[in-house]
Length: 116
Image (cartoon, rainbow, N blue to C red):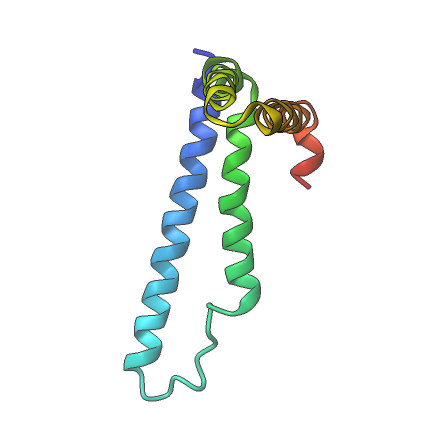
């Protein structure tokens, strides 16, 4: 029940990404087959590609939102930090793990600032 709004939002983002990619591929195919492709504006300009990349990067923020954070991301982060402490040498492993966990916790607390 808690995940329903989040899943709807995520699915809308995925659907939007799929439709955008489909439109871009259709536009590129039409531009290559049309004789007058110089008159047709290209949708694959830099700003469009940058916007698609920005939206894909924002998907990472779903991992920081409340239900996903509590159910998956936080427990996984703690487990990975414990494993990393054993794998990495102690002089670098412990400080590095603490630093990475602090950064992830900061992002989780202040992710609304990163969405702008």
